[in-house]
Image (cartoon, rainbow, N blue to C red; front, side):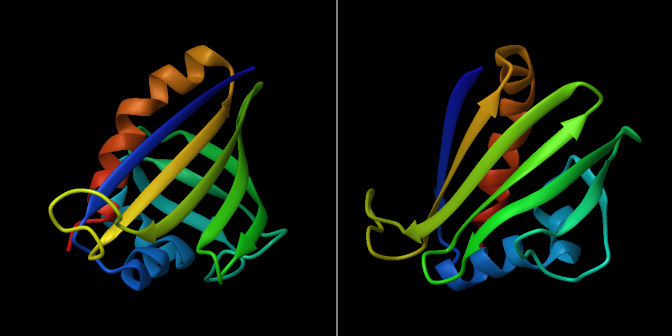
Length: 134
């Protein structure tokens, strides 16, 4: 197993970024690889199961492992066939750059097979950049 971390900063307020994570219906608006999210609920919560349909037609099963609304942090596991990846997302007030103290910083830590992480990283980084934009 390997671990890979990504980070993006942008002008969107932390509350806006967190809402974009929490509400499944918003995922396709900031994650260009996602066509739809299928669950029995509207928001992330521990134990929620579902699937993400990619723009390529692949369906990736997931389960939300944990959510901490106060710390704007959540984690989940995804599975595509035999490949399993754990992801942890955190959102904080931006602390670096020319606009430190405004906007948001989001971090993603992925753990899984190295080839899967390296293949997914460019799409994940693009999604993170879109997530924190205004």
